[in-house]
Image (cartoon, rainbow, N blue to C red):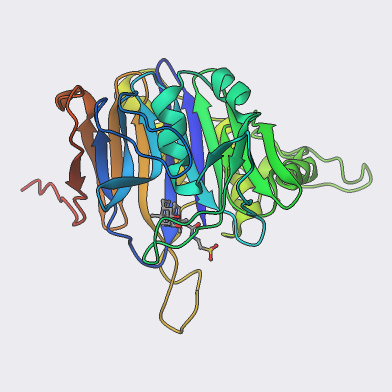
Length: 325
Ligand SMILES: C[C@H](CCC(=O)NCCS(=O)(=O)O)[C@H]1CC[C@H]2[C@@H]3CC[C@@H]4C[C@H](O)CC[C@]4(C)[C@H]3C[C@H](O)[C@]12C
């Protein structure tokens, strides 16, 4: 499970939690403008926007999990098991393989509006990257500072939703996730009041009681409600430090601690492998990992963005403890 997030203070920020029981050898990868993107069923892109994000590079191709381009457009893929349904090749359509989707979108477009128009021609074609990297059931959040989209290729076809929350988790489909929020409309950040019965007296014995009922478990629909509530009510200063702190705190509200979500065998647990936050205005990609709470940053503009060679940075994964004495 994962959570994707778009948030604006003064600058715009985009990132995600990647929740999984094992890492995929992901690195922060910068794809410069002249790295030739070859696609399976589409014309290649010899030049394109530069991209920074988290990726596994395989056979020279950056398999992005999430990324941001030099125009400030961002996109992340999140698990969507049982619902993702990729299609046979469709003549006359832009047949994009799922693993190509992030490079294809971030390579070409500047804004969510442009992507929305282009998506009317897209067919997510069922072509896997390789035997080693088989098809992943994903859906996507695409964001700029003005808004977000959710894209889902399901049995009925390609569904594109406006995403007014700037939040995406996993199953069920986005329309159902959105509908589920109706159940929480009574939640409040203000102290609770007695609407239960005028004939009874209650004690507001704790702060925060206005949001009792906000789910705290780690299922994807619960993380969706929790992350939307936290983000929509988020108050942040506009400096880089305050914005980053707030962003990581929102992601922290739905992070997974080892031991709480058992998967497969007895000692396999889902954890938040990394949390990321890219300042889409400056092109700096920040991240923390499960065992490294210190924020590490990679600046896209420190790389030669006109080159043709991907640069990647292995994650700094151990705790960086600042001893004070
Ligand atoms: C597993 C992750 C989602 C985390 C998650 O939600 N875990 C809960 C599992 S559970 O649902 O709760 O049981 C997703 C998110 C992005 C994905 C990569 C995208 C690029 C590439 C696409 C290729 O086609 C296959 C390999 C590839 C490297 C992908 C591997 C994997 O699929 C990644 C890491």
